[in-house]
Length: 206
Image 1 (cartoon, helix red, strand yellow):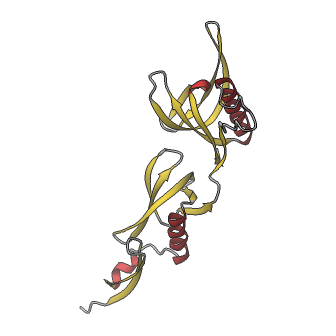
Image 2 (cartoon, one colour):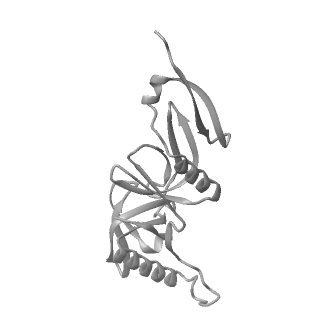
Image 3 (tube, one colour):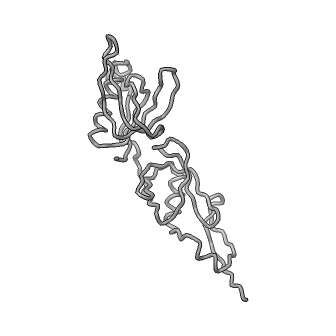
């Protein structure tokens, strides 16, 4: 039996250039074809610290890509997922849609604009600013991302969807809570507004 081999070029992200390899003809049927333009867009985004909107099998997220990998005839893009708040890897296949976004965060709070408002760094002003920002994001049905300090002073990053603001009476205090579906815990969670260290409205709707 005669075996036919073919020479193919593939993009090696670690070397930042095309590499030549010899493969049996039968293997070409297993290789997922990736458009060179897609690889160039990803590589440029990594170099310029841009973000992607990624959609795969109906699920959407925002990813800050860190590197490209090539294993067993398939490319993978690896980066920081703003929804799960961890490093994840996505296979570049026909189910994956990638769009570059220049502004993954639509708004952030607090701004600490003490030059124009001397009270901007006070706890009351920060709480009001974050509350107003949440209301704006809620009307747009945007995912939101918070840096949160719990009652034990432990800090974590949470991305939340389908949320609302709830006024609660705690003794003599009137306290506002953010209540919504936490993507880290995969369940409904409550967060005191005065414990939110930072707020971001993401360029992604639920």
